[in-house]
Each structure stands twice: as C-alpha cells, then as structure tokens.
Amino acid sequence: MKTYVITRPNGWSSTQELEIAAGISTRVGNEEMPDKVRWIRSYVTRHEGGRIGTVCVYQATNPEAVREHARRVGMPADSITEIADTVIVRPDPSSA
Image (cartoon, rainbow, N blue to C red; front, top):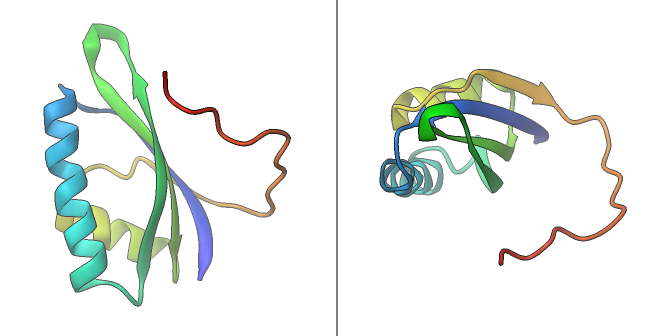
C-alpha cells in the first residue's frame, strides 16, 4: 500500500457531523475495504463560518480506493496526494 494525504476543507458543519462520518469511515474501512484502505490519522481544521474540515493520512492500494472509500462514507475527498517520504522533526503535539 502507498500512503496518501487527503484534504477535506469545509466538509462538515459541526464536530457532531464529523464524528458520525468518522464512525462510518471506520466501519467501511475495517469491514468493507480492509485490504484496500487504512485510515491512519486525521487533523481537524476550522474554517470560515465555523465549518470543519480534515487533513487525513491514509494507506491505500491506489487513489481510486481512497475515492471509493469516500464515496461509500458519503464524504468529500477534495485532494488526494501520494506521500513520497516522511520527515519527522518533532512528534505530533498532544491536544490541549
């Protein structure tokens, strides 16, 4: 599998909507597509008007698998970019 960054700016109107989508995403990935898509982590972003978005890291067989996963979940996949390498300067900060 390759690693991808998926951006979903302005995908949801509230954190509650995002939580519901996350539950569906987990189920679809784990039960329907476990050999094609793996959700690694997401960063939640806040946008104008209070909209919620995400920047997600996934492993997948190809971008089409990421798009299919998003379609099954009913969420956007505005941009899918393959990760060429990882440089870690510091570990991810913990949430406050």
